[in-house]
Amino acid sequence: MRDLVIIGSGPAGYTAAIYGARADLKPLVIASSVAMGGDLMTTTDVDNFPGFPEGVMGPDLMMGMQAQAERFGAELLFDDATKLELSGPVKRITVGNGDVIEAKTVVLSMGSEYRKLGLEDETRLSGFGVSWCATCDGAFFRNRAVAVIGGGDSAMEEATFLTRFAETVYIVHRSDQFRASAAMLSRAKADPKIQFITGAVVDGILGAETVAGISLTNTDGSTRVLDIEGLFIAIGSDPRTSLVADQVELTPEGNIAVAGRSSVTSIPGVFAAGDIIDPTYRQAVVAAGSGAVAALDAQHYLESNTH
Ligand code: NDP
Image (tube, rainbow, N blue to C red):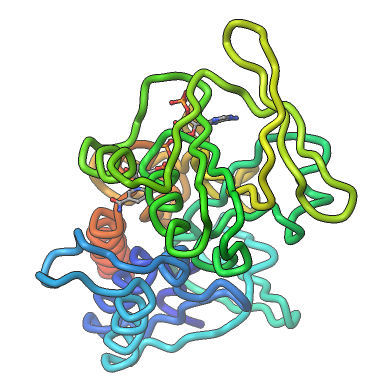
């Protein structure tokens, strides 16, 4: 039986692994079969992680965290947790290959998943012009017109990145109030390739086989079609709680509930860290800090539950 199993390999999971390994808990990280390293693996420059005065590429940051965790003895399993049985002193984690791993403590750090617009053609055209990742798919739209939906930092970041390839990048936002930070908003506003369309809701995606445009309804009720070939959806994300929602207490926002500033969940021996507990800050450095908290909480739990 494992002392500590960590589910998720973003900044929270890897930091929990570094702390857990240094405490000699020999953690196992269930690192995912496809998305190891989390969202930062599909990001370019990370300019706000302390200690990197010139910035760092997202994948380099994550591979550094992984190497650091492994250096202290953390083990990684590149598979997905498919079922979690968390009540009782022995936690059971089923993974994609059918193996069941038993653990005394579990850290839940599965992060969040991108929100969808909820339009009929969104899934059909996903991968055929509809994308949630500019760094993954931006290069397909060289000299084309694309639209980014959203008004937060993600939308600004995606749009700015897309100007490397696209001829025109429209940022389409449903209001004229932006959640994006002043710095990222003004960088996008200053970019000659970016055009803002505010007060417009996307109500349809056009195109038989690939995206050919989007239909917009403005706040005054008027409608228009915007001719674009790429649609990048950047409207935020929701905590990835489907494996645990029926077992652990959630907050009204849908995050895993933790006690105060700790990582302690409603289930003894189960701790949570990173975006999955955070409706507010959602920064890599905050997730990393919360991963450290979770490993320390797991360590204290194990120390006070030795029989
Ligand atoms: P946010 O929640 O900040 O913004 C989501 C945006 O999408 C809002 O403008 C919202 O509009 C809009 N939106 C939500 N749902 C819909 C919908 N159904 N249809 C149309 N528009 C919709 O999410 P982000 O992903 O942008 O950012 C999340 C967090 O990550 C933030 O804390 C951000 O600071 C951080 N981040 C930081 C980065 C950095 O520092 N480099 C880069 C990227 C993200 P409305 O305002 O009207 O609700």
